[in-house]
Image 1 (cartoon, rainbow, N blue to C red):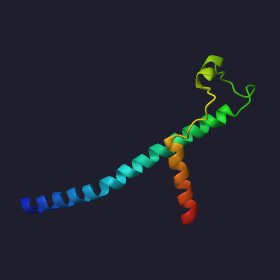
Image 2 (image 1 turned 180 degrees about the vertical axis):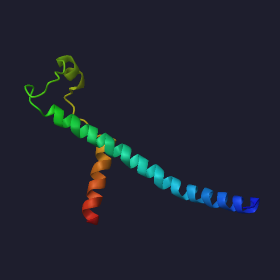
Image 3 (image 1 turned 90 degrees about the vertical axis):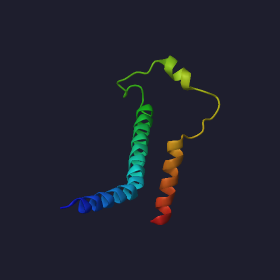
Image 4 (image 1 turned 90 degrees about the horizontal axis):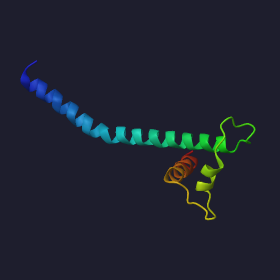
Length: 92
């Protein structure tokens, strides 16, 4: 294998990497969002339990810090997940 063949091989690998990189970044982003959604669902499942079922007690002062009379906006992760679900329903 001479130097010319090695440069051609490196050029092809470089172009392949440049073309595959956006897809790999998008895949990593989707996995992170899915992980965040699973963690949020676990948090909702834990908070929906009755206090007798929940082995870990949350101090009342921590609950008071998060309460508000104003309704909150859904998080970006929730908004993203709802959009993905609706696209899946349309494409199915």
